[in-house]
Length: 390
Image (cartoon, rainbow, N blue to C red):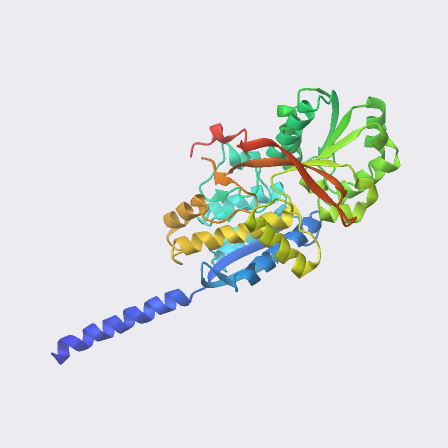
């Protein structure tokens, strides 16, 4: 009896120890954040929101211990690729999120997909990953790049805006965003101008706008680019006759604080706004304002939601993040309360969601901020999903 019992008990003890050791291994998330360089404003917002989510989740994911490994990409695709390789090879991450620009998403994707690491995008939604290059390990949680612009184009058409001047930086997201506006806008495009990433002086472009005399200018100029453009546009007196339309990248709290009163009356379209009335959003905005004393931007909103999406997936798989098929299924199910309202993934793992029209005005307390006006596109999906074979 002893001879048969002892090995069995020892085996059971070893199995129990093994399970405990496995359970003690933290779920690892690689956070590649743009904390310096041309996208640092959005990167700082993403960092603050991620840190808030981590705090609210008690440094756990799905109730399991978690480790969050942060690194600064400096807005460089090459540096970001090296960070992704280090996350995969040295740190053995289970999930990846964080970057702001699309060129970085395109740079790190192959590294992550080859290692079968899910990339939950908290901002960029390049058209390549929505269409022919769609991948089961990429989740475009935020939006596909073209979509808020398609909402803007639809609204401008509904308003019978007769002509528009388009401007963006010359990189993948810039081309996607202007392409989205053109897809739904029915008026005349008088010019389509692409400047340098990080450009701060728009004197030449403003002269072109003055000469073209459009009814509206639609622009995608994130960060300091948009701040300078709006200031210079208003200073040049163009706002008296030309309507400014943009997306959230140049119409959020960071831009409002930097530009001040000249930003009054700026229209934007976005998949999210701080005044959306759903409970999950109200909690997020309240906790963010409590922690940082300001309204969050859409960069913060989607970064926060990325962590909540990972949390829900880890909970669904009961911490067994090594089961890749189960993890992908759980991420696709999106079993979390979205701060954007109605949300689900399409076949290409980009959202089917609403897009809102907002205007910047003074609220009842005299504070400059966004007010949601309408929903130009409802339960909308991107233009590339038919090209995805998933």
